[in-house]
View 1 (tube, rainbow, N blue to C red):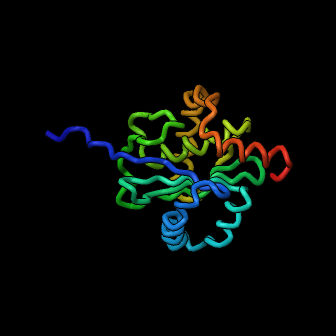
View 2: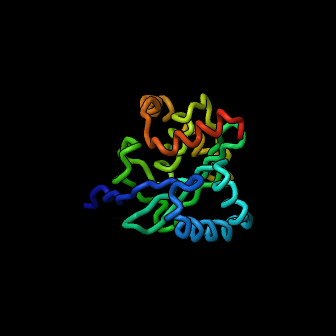
Length: 178
């Protein structure tokens, strides 16, 4: 009799301007794999958005190895964009570790942890609405799932972490940079 599969441990890191630049190599590796899958994308342009603090990338690591990411674009209404998880990890349930700025939710897949993280960061930065622009066959399911979870996540919005990231986003927003 097979038991419930064991969840893997992941931690979430963010890239935004100078924040998280030690994870650039990891992100670039995943971004190139992602571009090969979807047949479009532009790593140098994406890096420019991050350097100009117009985007936040949230990176999922398992035992220090990059296994997925999600983009949160800040150039207009905040919008969750491209989402990628390495194929061998897509069906795995994930437990957060070393990610004190996000409450761990039981039973979430890696992609779901990433969606929640992007949504929560966008809301903590003072945005009332966070759009999504998922671009694959699972997009409608992800959007529907996210919409059923938002009320639960709203209880986490009042936290002020990760402080350095939120201060950067708010500062740019007040200056009218997006």
